[in-house]
Amino acid sequence: MKSVAVLPGDGIGPEVVSAALEAVEQLRLPLDLRFGEIGWECWRQEGTVIPERTWKLIEETDTCLLGAITSKPLREAEAELHPTLRGTGLDYVSPVIQLRQHLGLYANVRPITDIDRGQFDFTVIRENTEGLYAGFDVHGLDESLWNAVRSHPNAAASGREATSVTLRLQTQFGMDRLLRYGFEYAERHGHRRLTVVDKPNVLRHSSNHLRERLELIAQDHPDVETEILNVDAVALWMVRRPERFGVLVAENMFGDILSDLGAGVMGGLGLASSGNIGDHGSYFEPVHGSAPSMAGQGRANPMAMLLTIAQMLDHLGMPVPGQELRGAVSKVVRARTTVTYDLGGTARTSQVAQAVAGELPGHTDEPAPPTAVSTDVVDRLAQLDTASVSDALDSMGIPCVLAGLAARVPGTRAAGRAYTVTYRPVDASVDRGFRNAANYLDDVPEGSFVVVDNAASTTCTNWGSLLTNLAQRRGVRGTALHGSARDIAEIRAAKYPLFSTGATMVSGKNRVELAATGRDVVIGDVTVRPGDIVVADDNGALVVPAEYATEVADRAERVERTESAIAQAVNGGMRLDEARRQFGYANPWGDDGKQPSRA
Ligand code: NAI
Ligand code: MG
Image 1 (cartoon, rainbow, N blue to C red):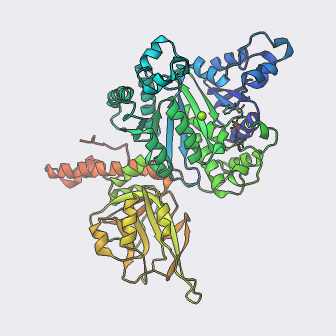
Image 2: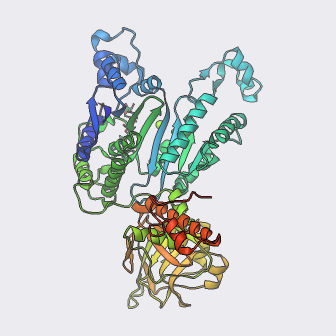
Image 3: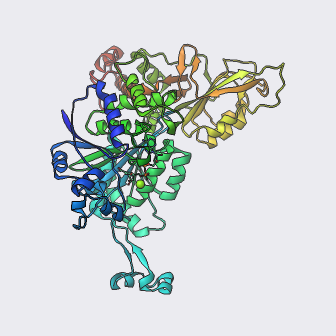
């Protein structure tokens, strides 16, 4: 049983907290929720935003769940104080800053997931205690600072009194604990890439210091790949290629800016959650504030709060209900029928919370919506033979083969997130001119596997050399075409993984048109949903449902280990039947058999 200090706070805070907690009640979480007071009302009545009893509650509990808190400038803070407290020299200090300092919370963690289409899933981890926001910020310099900057021509032209300086503080103590947390977070959440966001070509010395610490600490985490990128480039890529990121670690100001950009990339304040983590404490809150103008109207989006609870559950070691909650929110977002105004709907806070509750396990027989598969799991699947992946899916009773799709380019293999495209025949009796049916390709995210459904037609084509060229430039992993292709020679020369029902020379121009993208596609008895993982090689193409991707990768890797152990033993002279018995051929995906360790 874990205990949580629930601090609803001000404005829309209490509304979203109570709606969200009511929705998750049916998960019967092993949580002891203990409510406390924090925020503007405490300040007005008691002259402190965090009363002593609330600090005590925070000390007694495992973590805190915060709604939102109103902060106002100094003059208003003084004016709104209870008359008996006015003029007594009380100082308003933001409760968020007090919590961070008092609990030593050095990492601000913001998961950014594509809750709508499952195309990306990364996390921004911002340093909270040093960097450019460390507080060394002065206007009008003392002698020592002035001596440090006076050689700059602009400073010389302005003089000591008319110059300001902010220092970026980077300490080994601060960097090391942040990097360690970043690596551990990546490992726990199955991310295999850690990107350090910095500006090495301008801030040469401090960046190099950070790089040295990174290289040292990375040695303890050999399974996580690292890179250092310029902050401006990351801003661009976050918008253009969000699927390429796993965990991003950044100093205070860079992280501040990027985490808000991330909130925008994932669809706005109504969906963004955050956690503040230290070695001995933590609190979780939605990114949005108290939105005073909306307070009391029941129109605020409770999803940010629901996703914040999911993040807290992960942190408390309860990833399964956390994932169920995210899945339920995702389903309501995708259905678009019960969403608040910020997502284009008219639903009220309580209605959205109830709709999410209705999608939680125990309330529905429908399958969970597709989950976002991390890039690392996709990459693992890309390393595996379709034969092993198919064995793994077989062992789980999941049909997977995209029947009738043959490899057109021998020797290629690929895995990627399904981006589905549906074609339909053009009605020739109505001439509506030329149709740019393939323009969808400009919008396909990097890492996608394009799945085109033209009802297995072999009378005209939906793929050729021009699209191959564009797809390769956009980082598309391959194409599975339930239909026909042409320009096979050029596509072979380009070594592009193409799988299709047929090949012909007849153009599809004005014979077919685009019906939809992002819709489920049915091939044989297999349904491909957007975000599922397509895996393909010379044997053909198959699809791994997104929600089983990790388990399938685990099982398939065990299959390959078993098979290579058997092959090795046989080459060493062992009888086949003996080798199969010894290495558990009857149940190669199981982890209970005798598994030789990977050489
Ligand atoms: P805000 O996030 O409270 O609101 C900005 C706008 O975003 C709102 O006007 C509303 O249109 C929209 N919005 C926010 N949350 C929403 C939700 N759940 N559903 C639908 N729309 C939503 O930011 P603002 O207006 O800058 O600050 C208001 C107060 O909140 C201030 O007193 C500020 O100090 C405080 N604040 C507190 C934070 C915290 O508790 N950590 C963080 C940010 C602001
Ligand atoms: Mg900010």
